[in-house]
Image (cartoon, rainbow, N blue to C red; front, side, top):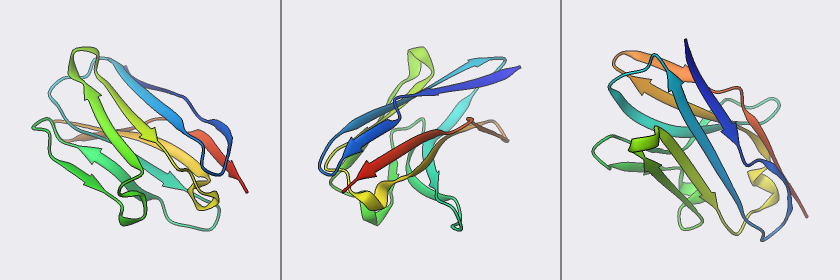
Length: 115
């Protein structure tokens, strides 16, 4: 069984920082893309940031310059450093991992930014 364990969410004031982590474990091989999506009530789940195994990154325009994605491949872990947080960043953040042709999702972690 493949498991994605997320941590790092919480409540922070505008301008604050949080660091999310997601560790993949179990019977998972050939991990390609690791990344983060987020979703708010009434909205579609959207890409926040992702990184391929080759190091290529994609960021949502709204987080460019504020969020940084990184990976520790030895630990099958992806991180999202979130700085200068804004209320509009409030959402449930989901880890997403693509291994071979299978997509795995974490359970989600709540990030709330108060104004």
